[in-house]
Length: 337
Image (cartoon, rainbow, N blue to C red; front, side, top):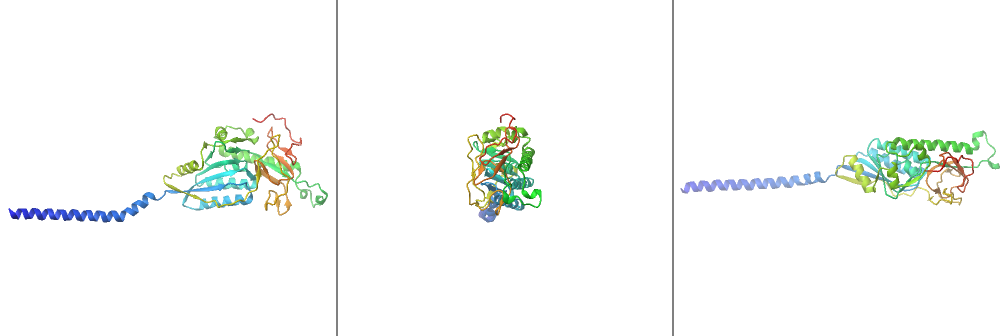
């Protein structure tokens, strides 16, 4: 009998030792695997890059944002881009450069725009190719048009030229060129927003501005939401559940002061005071040229005759230096909607 009990005790002891061994092995394996498993669950699926345009649009500020967009395209770890736009626009050429850079980026990854206080004129131009546009309820959106300053070349010190074109463009030529730029602007908006727009091309040409809730209603924007909402939308479009957010924009102040005040008749006020900014629209180191602007508001220090393509019948309007119409444009097109 005692032999039988000894055998049972030995068997139980063996089982106990085996169980302890198994538990120890499991603990050791768990300790080794846990960091890997934890890292796998906490590692983000990808990255959403935030790029800011928070100034008027000059060649320098546009170049900085274009460089950021190029970096986003070339960085394999970046899966989507959010444009944080707070800009009343600026130079037409610089705005077009941004439009093309955003369009190119949107062909490679999701791009979502968050318009903050202002996304007007050139600020809206650059936003148009985005997959989605989010606005705040009171954001200022729209102002789809072009205006230009015409430099008077009739003074005696400008009369000697080697050819008719060397004297600069006439007012009519400036007006025609601004009109073509406006039509290109409108066409670009229609190309990217046509399915959502509840505005005709004629209505777009009035260059009206809308608050955010109106912009959502008429199709210039998609949804009400701040930058965080836009980031979430961009991540969803990229198929990211767990993601990190990086800001590519450096601190920069590369734009020019823009004045938003209007005259008594509602036209922008053009300020003729001198200014000390190193770069002005249409100023190349002291050489004055016509400046074509996609801007809502007036540029501090802007001088010369203003040519505005936003007019009651969507024709081109020429205004004097105080923003007052001189009667050259046809104004019989009725009231703006």
